[in-house]
Length: 132
View 1 (cartoon, one colour):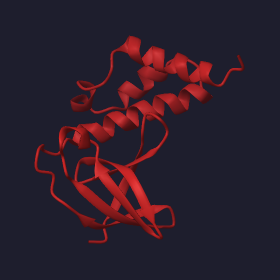
View 2: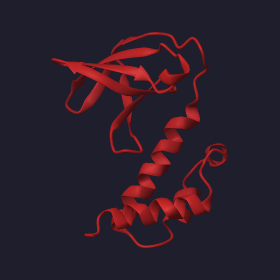
View 3: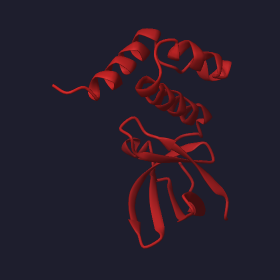
View 4: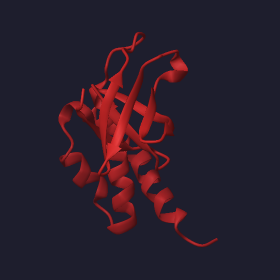
């Protein structure tokens, strides 16, 4: 089990991994082992994963089955969309949302926030860097 885990930026700027279409958040690390819990841990999911980090790439060592829910492939794509908007809000001017929606698959668009919510995200990120 030495497959590479895709990393996704969380809404708060942390790291999540996508393992078999399940999003996992970091619980703790010990030496070179990183222990992850399912994003739906609050909903009683006991899914876990153990990875090792080499050259900034997480390699899957161990994976336990998620009993209470099916994999959701759209979650990782939605998280990528949100983090890309936030990254671009720091760098480029308007048309951010339109450019990202065009590059997002149609099946994922159903799960995205409204345009107004995306505008608020951009404003929040832009204002976060300003002095009081």
